[in-house]
Amino acid sequence: MIIHLDPTITAASKQDIEARIKALKYKTTEVKTQRAHYLVAIGKAEVDLRTIGQLPGILDIHQVSDDYQLVSRKWRVRPTVLDLGDGVRIGEGTLTLAAGPCSIESEQQMESIMQHLLDNDVRIMRGGVFKPRSSPYSFRGLGMEGLKLFHQMARARGIKIVTEVMQVSQVEEMHDYVDVFQVGARNTQNFNLLDALGGVDKPVLIKRGISGTIEELLSSAEYVFSGGNEKLILCERGIRTFETASRNTLDLNAVPILKEKTHLPVIVDPSHGIGIRDHVPPMALAAVMAGADGIIYEAHEKPEEAASDGQQTLNFQESARLIRNLRRVYQLRQELE
Image 1: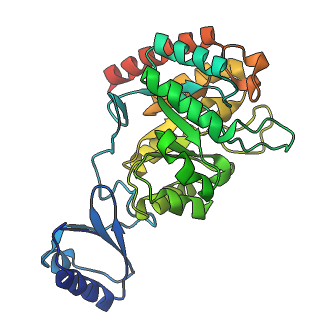
Image 2: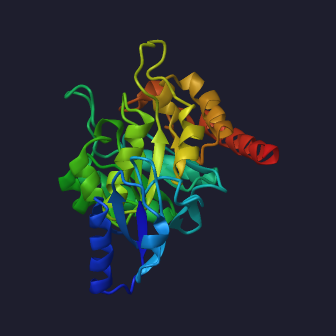
């Protein structure tokens, strides 16, 4: 049960509501976000919502049967659309594209990629400065100094940044230099990190875990929302299965299922999803037809020289072609709807 409280509610009224809920043997959790003030009540007893909803200080009340409450579409039917500023939006009604390298490598590399994005009217750049690598001997990113340069160059060109945060201690130092925090597949159930991101007023993109279920992805988003941050984006990026012909199995079933279950924006990462450069474009196009609100993929001027993930990274010519085709397919999807 989600109880939407009046922002001017008195302490006495809130205590009265909590007492009435407790009498029903429900456990309540108070949630304050950028947008609103809620009580989330969890219990099993049958409740006549009218007996609670008429109490002073309540704006609205919803019965939600899902284990995840705040991210469920059962209470917020209208899809969430995030505004990153400068006309950049993520959510239903638009197709948002984000591209860039797996890892930020140098000033020259960033400059060439940013120019490529601007030439193709893409306003969000992805790029890692803290890289979780399977081998400790692989390139692991440029760290905070790289992020500060990334931020400076992106700001000068009107480009928004999405980059991965690895641990709680990095959240505060990265805060002023990112537009979207990314939680990578290895950290989807790092609950301390999710709790910390609940306390920031910036969008958080959560990737599905390496072997994570859809329910687990939604539960991870619930952690951040319940911590106070409603600005969330879900990302299908492929899951590990018994199949070895591709890096992962890109689960496009997840797109319409997530769109049905949650009001949050849903985007797809076909680069990690399949891990094979030649097959990234068709999977990206298929993701759009499946209903994705956006595509995030890897691009580099010379993928064969990339510090990481070159095998799944598009060169600029391939990237430009994909951008054109994504927009055409999105237009087709709108016409079909």
